[in-house]
Image 1 (spheres, rainbow, N blue to C red):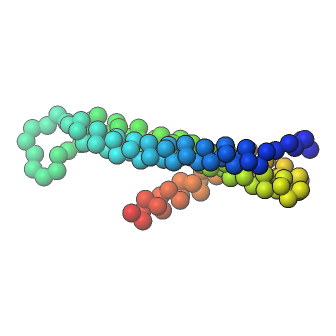
Image 2 (image 1 turned 45 degrees about the horizontal axis):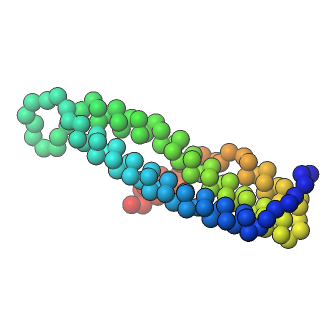
Image 3 (image 1 turned 90 degrees about the vertical axis):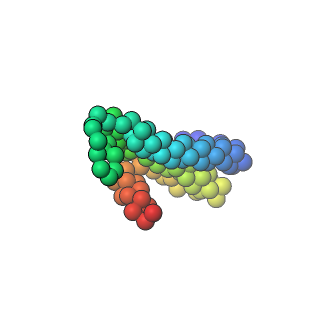
Length: 130
């Protein structure tokens, strides 16, 4: 078992700062989706007159495919940060309570990659609820 020398106030300070940074990243990700959609619509297409909605051109299709293929990577960033912060908080709480074995377990669990199937399912559910 590793030696423990944790400053709970230091952990609180760092996790608070990471939380603020995560909020900023979430805003940027939302803007990324909105901006990509706007860019796809503005890219135009090669076509003559048309009735109804403007067709999506090849640039718009490419942007949509790019966003679709990178969505999992973008979601992973938030999921990884969330799991790390929550693990640090949980391990620190166990440390404060004197349970170093549980602190070590929390730390080890936080090191594992997030369950992206669950993260993606949750993101799809939130998207469907809008």
